[in-house]
Image (cartoon, rainbow, N blue to C red):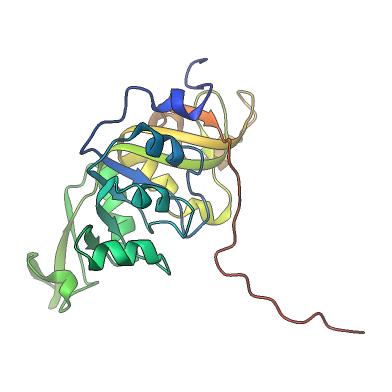
Length: 236
């Protein structure tokens, strides 16, 4: 270990995991998932987890691993795609689900990082999303109140980091990871590349170092494609 940089995923998670904790896990579809950290959580055997993530992985990938081992008790998310294992566990009553519109989920996480305990949105008004939640009128329009989301641990994936913890994400991986980096009591980041201090343009930094506690170099970078669509090659 040197400063914020740890030698391995297991070393970076040492002392942070416990039963019943809440974990934010970055990623959008199969992009930007903390692929190296999730297997270490599985191997640690912690259980009764609440996981906050845009989606719950795909067959054999990402958070699916923690579903397979029955370590997750509750999922707060917005999309599940074709995750058959999640579907089976939810329909069997083995898994608690808090389903959010995608923009609302992102804003709840951002609010948690910004210290804003609640906000109002029109999204979900008049639907099951608003059931049991306070509603209020502003300028003649009805809004539903949503609350912040925070976590004991945020595990995220970035493209590049410097030793101080400044981060840059690549393309779609920037969707949820930056917000989650701000909303965890402890934030552990896996990156594809660690660059020397001063190598990152301060104007291009997506997450400043103040939010990052521990960094590891990714050991898994599969870069899967969730739905591969092709067309015949045109002949000349």
